[in-house]
Amino acid sequence: MTHTANEKAALPPGDLAIWFFIYAELLVFGILFLLYAFARSNNVELFNSSQDLVDRTSGAANTLVLITSSYFVVRAVAAIREGKVQLCSRWLLATIGMGGVFVVIKLVEFHAKFSAGISLSTNTFFTYYLSMTAFHFMHVLLGMVILAAVYLKNRKGGYSAAEHRGVETGASYWHMVDLVWIILFPLVYVMR
Amino acid sequence: MSDTSSEVRRWIRPCTVIWLVLMALTLVTLGIGKLGLSGTGVVAFIMTTTFIKGQMVADYFMGLKQVRWSFRIITLLYMVIVCGLILVAYMVGLNG
Image 1: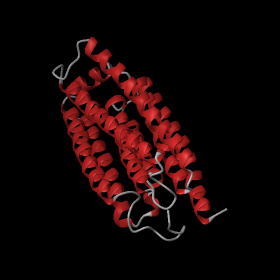
Image 2: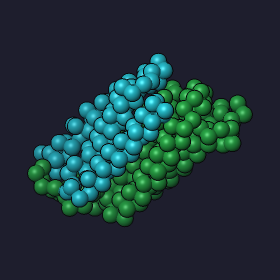
Image 3: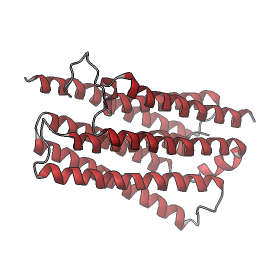
């Protein structure tokens, strides 16, 4: 952050290319959310009864996990902006660890659904529920890979207070993953 | 304290508060889900809090509050359009 409190930066943090990627991803998820919402308006009873079968506690736990991981990556960016390389590495590891917790919770949830005989073809609700959560799950995995690459480069002294665009780029992508889940959770798990 | 450290601290403090607010709002949403609440008011409340949560992540965590409007407005419009149309779809379902 090289600007003052009153001066706005011309570009967002990180590599500009990641922002075009982020906006494209948001657009895809936004379309999926609206397809779900309008499909539901024609099948309210089916969606409500099917929604009773999803694990809201797991969904909420994963929301808390992702929000916390997003905060951790904020701390990683803050650390590297101050030139605290080791501290940045620790926050990045904590972020990746929270991503791992999300993955485990989601895999347990998927396993429970598949064990109960629920699949993509069960009904329209589960087609959307499994597609959207699995698609998001893949983004979590990609985010963890990106953050792991940033972590490894940072450990080798690849970032500093003066040059840390890669850390900001990885963090921006991870926040996008969090932002999408913040909409997905109430939409699929709660609203009826 | 250097200018950079001071700026970083000015960014972290609100982020810590926002992290706690986001956690609290998520627990409220879970409570609504556990109670099985529904209806126009509940859906409007959930979508409003979702919009606020999304904006908090974009503005503070992503740092867009410190960026010129040309970029910041994209996520703002996204949240308005997506949350707004989801709300419309639910209203159609509730009244249909």
